Amino acid sequence: MKKQSNFEQLITELKGILEDQGQISKNSWDQLARKYSRKDKQTPSKNAVIEYIKKHDIEIDDYLLKEIQMKPTRTISGVAPITIFTKPYKCSGNCIFCPTNKSTPKSYLPEEPGIQRALHFNYTPYEQVEGRIKSVEMIGHNANKIELIISGGTWDDYSRNYQIWYMLEVFRALNKLSSQKYSSKRNYKSNKYLKKLKDLQEKNKKSKHRSVGISIETRPDKLNYENITWYRRFGFTKIQVGVQTLDNEILKLNNRKHTLEQTKKGINLLRLAGFKIHIHWMCNLYGSNPKIDYQDFKKIFSDKNIKPDEIKIYPCSIIKGTELFKLFQEGKYTPYSNQELIDLLTKCKEQIPKYCRVNRLIRDIPSNLIVEGNKITNLRQHVQKNMSLKGKKCQCIRCREIKDKEQKDLRIETHRYKTNISQEYFIEYVTSEDKIAAFLRLSIYQNKASEFTNTKAMIRELHVYGQVMEFQNKSSYSSQHKGLGTKLLMKAEKIAKKNKAKSMAVIAAVGTRSYYIKRGYNEINDLGYLIKQL
Image 1 (cartoon, helix red, strand yellow):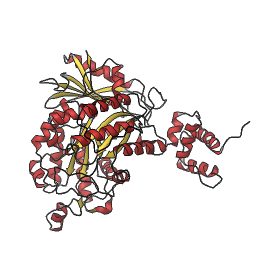
Image 2 (cartoon, one colour; image 1 turned 180 degrees about the vertical axis):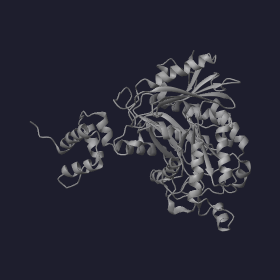
Image 3 (tube, helix red, strand yellow; image 1 turned 90 degrees about the vertical axis):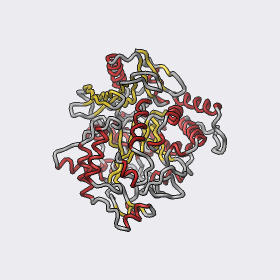
Image 4 (tube, one colour; image 1 turned 120 degrees about the vertical axis):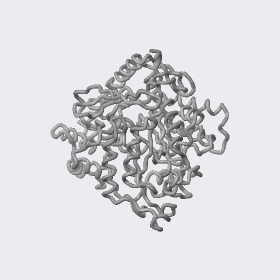
């Protein structure tokens, strides 16, 4: 009988621990790693164990793989998020709180972790995507379903030529096409290159690393019909909008160079186009105070022109070299104390409806670069603790995600809310403890059909939680590939019919279009929308 290798013996013991204890503690892992250390006395890493399992096709339970994985939360939301950056470039804004550095896009600093990775690859999109996929897979995660987050400067400030080149390289990387490199110095505005982009997107529908969502960052004054049409050609599904505040006077004091009216108009246009709407909001801006901030935050969900699907909350920080830093030195600006900030965000979190997700409560700026302002890196935990002490809890999507909890007693709940242009339906599968296993966003347009699809009904998002699974794979613990998405689609179609919609459109990422086609939807044009006759 062949003697088992150290790795095989380690895996066998891990299986036994999992059967006996239901989980593998850090202490158990450390003891086994030392027990089966290599001849050079180096203990095997989790990454090395996972690589061995894959290389030798060792059959193990999905749950054991999950227990071995490092950073399990990275893909627990159902997708593998990957962030890349655009190159340093001039910005159409000149906000007083925004740092400027020649080696980074506007508002970012060289010391930020994401920027350091981008600098390593000289901001080239292909190398960034390739490198991030490798990093995700090296720590044992599945990178089949990629949610690509394109950060950096305002997307619409870059030339159209740069944008087309950037997305050609992004899809080339997702498809793992090491040849066919596109030079950044070429002219890409001809239809020939748009066809090449379309061809790369077609390949991505069956690629190992599929695009299941792409987001970019922009400003409210850049949201117009032409730019939004290009977003769809590029395969974008979520737009992050730097709203910052709904107060025109504070916008002016902070030199934002856009107005509340432009924000409202832009968000309404994004909703008509079916995008997931993600806004950035800042508290403690110059000219504001906790009372003004709280009233401003409440308007986000009471004003029918706003009501975002996701939100990032950024407390303003003072960075050297900014106009705000000068105002601070002159005694004209004072940041909130930690307790003032925690109390404010506690009250704000209480206002967030079930249909919205709070993605962040702070910017990822190293605390040593912040002169004054929030330096608490785990601010979310402090706010949650403060809410708990007051007998409150946040009901946003992130706080209710099912993660790795058992999925039982699932039921469908439907939440309705009105915007200026639509009746919105947030349909979710939840457990008895109100944890979300899956959800769908449906817009029924009230006064006119969508300008982009000529339909009255639009599915803007369909998301199923659980550890990322390979396409066609089924797991005993993940909610992916269990039919929840199909059931939510059927529910949405029933609601659309009730609202006398003759057809249903869906905004779909490139890598998810095959899913909808199998369920009766057909791609209608080069903008990537799919439509089903009801």
